[in-house]
Image (cartoon, rainbow, N blue to C red; front, top):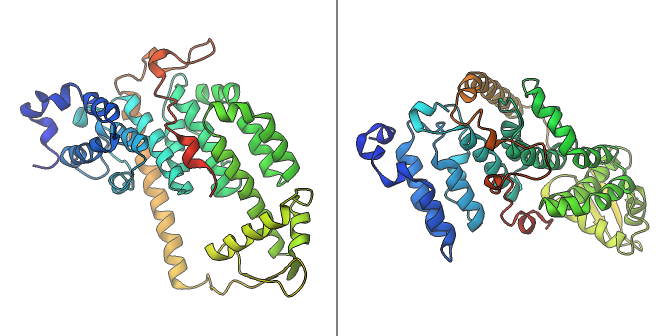
Length: 358
């Protein structure tokens, strides 16, 4: 029966229960890691008592999907908010919880679903902790960048985030916080300077692609701000106003950004080339947001946020009692660098290749 397999003697005696990582090794050592995805997805479906139950297979599947850059099978799984993390039911440990949300955030970032990516990274960072885990450090770095892409700022971490974690983030993630501060100034010059200053770090962390996306996102936000002030502007004027006037190909880049924003519905405007260099006319939003449909969406969003918060409160004590919660090998050492067994915690799996703007 679905959801009871993990309780049976047959399953406890199975190779999957004794050594689930063997399935990941099989997939990752093969020429095509994709071969391990479907079996792991099926295992999850057979193990779960409910769609919101986290199993020990979740992080293995997420890691394999990242390696294969194939997400069709995992998206329906990670779209379910986790509400059951009882280790007595599915044999998960603290590391499983952190890695699942870290890898899940990476998957959503790959898919450019930044709102969900932020949620996943936040769950990893704010998980109960006596000392910070390397996973939480890496998750916070991506939390900063995906927050900038989604919201234009970095939301304050939940008040229940462990003080030890917050202290460690200040020590290990300073350049990311500086980059975010420059972004929030909406100054192209400031963020460009911070990007150049932190470039080597971003490349080492495999976060440079996300950081570059933040650059275009800033241009888009600055263009959106112009729609509130102007009805018509030349492309050259827009280029100058958003700080790209000194760029050799600034005008061409800005026109491309404007066209993409119109196509995606981020702004309502028309581009005309009747005048030299091109003109942009900004239009009113044709959609009315005071209708019943909009209110239903807002209420649904509020209800979902309330449910997630309630789930987090319920899970907090369970997570704190998970195996591995006090395991020193799962935490950052005082010296520089991570322990050898934490190599996969900061695994970026080609993150650079799929985080570039495009």
